[in-house]
Amino acid sequence: MKRIGLAVIAALALSISTAAQADQLRSGVYALRSVPGAQLDYRKLYLAVDNGHITGFFDNPSTAPAANHPDRDPTCRFLLKSTSVARNEVDFATQFGGAQGQPISVSSNAKGVWSVRVHGDLPNCDVPTISTGDALTCRSSDLI
Image (tube, rainbow, N blue to C red; front, side):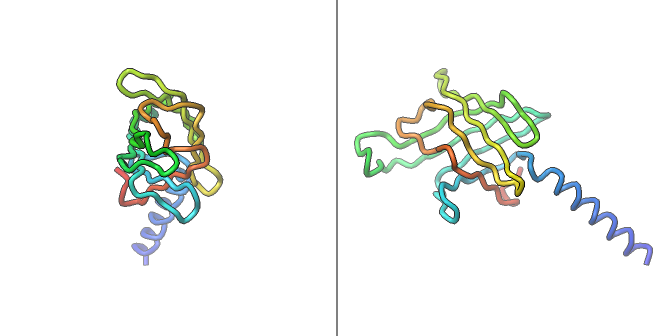
């Protein structure tokens, strides 16, 4: 009986710890959704969290031009580095190959869903494929 009680206490402590951190970004591979229920599998945000600093890489390797921009390269890839980290909001500087882009912010709501805000033009993105309002999702199997 004592072992069962200890197991229940350990499980409760683990669930409380996990719930307390649900509104923090973790290292992993995040997919982006533009509308609930729709996911473009090729758009990924790779993030590494280390002692309060977050670095990452946005990747949209699609090479098929959009119907509304047939003469523009849709590939969009750039690096991110956190400039401000709060419990439920992170601001990132963007750059690629020495070219600086405008910042991106992500913030979580009460349910732990992360929402993207793009503050201007992004580097190495002729046709941006990450937009304000996109939602980040990360399956537990994609956490690092």
